[in-house]
Image (cartoon, rainbow, N blue to C red):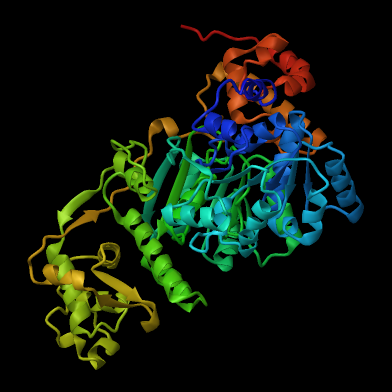
Amino acid sequence: MQRAQEILEKTFGYDAFRFDQADIIKTLIDGGDVLALMPTGGGKSLTYQIPALVRKGCAIVVSPLIALMQDQVAALKQVGVKAAFLNSTLSQEQGFEVLQNLRDGKLDLLYIAPERLVNDYMLDQLRYADLSLFAIDEAHCVSQWGHDFRPEYRRLSVLHDHFPDVPRIAVTATADERTREEIIQQLALGQAKTFISSFDRPNIRYTITEGNGGRNALAKFIESEHQGDAGIVYCLSRKKVEETASWLSKQGHNALPYHAGLDPQVRQDAQERFLREDGIIICATIAFGMGIDKPDVRFVAHMNLPKSIESYYQETGRAGRDGLPANVWMSYGLQDVIQLRSWVEDSDAGEEHKRVQAHKLDALLGLCEQSDCRRIALLGYFGETLEEPCGNCDNCLSPPEMYDGTVDAQKLLSTVYRTGQMFGVGYLVDILKGKEDDRIKRNGHDQLKVFGMGDDKTNPQWSRIVRQLVAGGYVYADVESYGAIKLTDKCRPVLRGEQTLMLRIPVKAKLSPARKRKSNRPVFNLSETDKPLYDALKTLRTNLSKAGNVPPYVIFGDATLEELITFRPDTGDALLMITGIGETKRDRYGKMLLEVIAQHPKVEAAE
């Protein structure tokens, strides 16, 4: 562990381990297996990269995406680690060279896709190599109950059969108890030590709003807090991805579409720009994001409801990986629920799998419609307790008003019952509003007692009530009946007046004045006198990234820039005290950094 501490400081530029890193690293160094759950941005990579440098041989890292492999290898080379990847971007000759380097002991880490790793040829090649460990990244992909299921991950159990003496670590940022059990079973990790760090990401602010505002609400969110920032906007369909990207571009933002239906080169170009340029917004389906190692994504927005809390946590976790303040924002409507339920029902999965997915969707809907701290509920889903409200979500910052909605709920439930549980939200609301409609008259529903009884509320208000009743389990949208609202047994006490039902009145989320930023300002708090140095360091970082053909954050992250400006080191040894600067980066970039800092002496603000 003394050697591990030296590598942490001298190679990676950090002075202390975080979360369970030290215990995980010690277990692997000692030859034990590990299952580790750590939050995005919590330093999962170091838990296997450091043991790979301590133990004899090469570590094999299972990575699901080409972008992740390339990012990790580029970052490792920047700090002087001998790393390589094997994927489809390499020519046959380049692939042979990587394998030869592996056999000759010239690599510390080799990144490889799961489907390539488990083929007979690759397994045979590994027998000629000295292996230090196997690291299985994004291990939740092994679970059929998870949100990123990949069948090829299940074949990774052969690693234990072929190399029983090589320690293995499976790491992920998202896995509920059922998924954790499946990871252990499918990867033969029965003897592994399990480490579960906190799922909390305190630097992230959570905001969830109703979907009536659509793109205008998204634009207001970006312009008020994230003008000029890098961000990701998730949409449910490819069409909506392209429409949203086009619309944001017309509003003056650098927005690009990304989904599986686009030409591969278009996708690649969009991803490269996102990684290498500042202020790019990617509008995407869930095809984008896993393995994206960009630490300075300042916001993630959802224009539709994700599939589950796991999906929501995974996708929102791509914001603020550097630990600096970030926002996640979601706008959703009942139509999202109907669409997602329809996809579950229409899938080829078994009935048990469909029930699990429906339950996960219900849990997410409950998170969206609750009135108290969202972080408490989010962490509670993963079995973690937060002792007090977080103070950094919309419900904490702008607590929703509640009212006795029992009578309104009774009106809606009665309308569902009296119309035979055969109609969708729009039709039910038209009845409550007393709309003069030929279809309503034809069905005789204008003669119902409830006709016109809800004229005191707007259509969006009634839609909001329906969503809360769905979230509470009093009604559900039956996808087999084209979204018809149907009653559950839970609604009976409400209809009979035996249960009071409190409903929320939405309020607009208040933006903290400290979080509003002008375009192109750093996310951390700097004085105006520090801005010239900040701009100069960013320019240097950009030039170095272009020269090295790597993303800017691989050179230095924003957190490193913040410390350089705050502490203004004036010697090479002082640079080693800055987070993210180890000996290799000091030797490679130190002279240039010190020159830039010297050219911008500290100016004391006038009293």
